[in-house]
Amino acid sequence: MKKYFDATEFYRRKEAGRKAKAKRPVAEKMATVAKLRDVEKSLAPIRAANKARRASKQIKILIKTA
Image 1 (tube, one colour):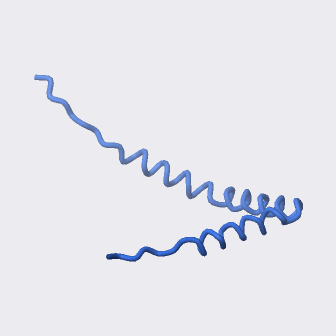
Image 2 (tube, helix red, strand yellow; image 1 turned 90 degrees about the vertical axis):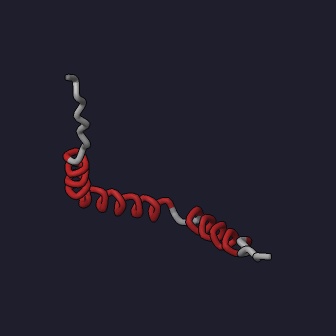
């Protein structure tokens, strides 16, 4: 019989992390959000290039009508 991993410790650590993040000051949370926005802006050209590349790879299905 297979024994499964006991996830209680894993969930206990996740909960402790969530509580620690919730206790941070609002200014620190706002600084984190500002950093994430900066990262998002720096990745915008890469995301646009990927979107264009995906759009150019659309599959065209030819249907015979005759």
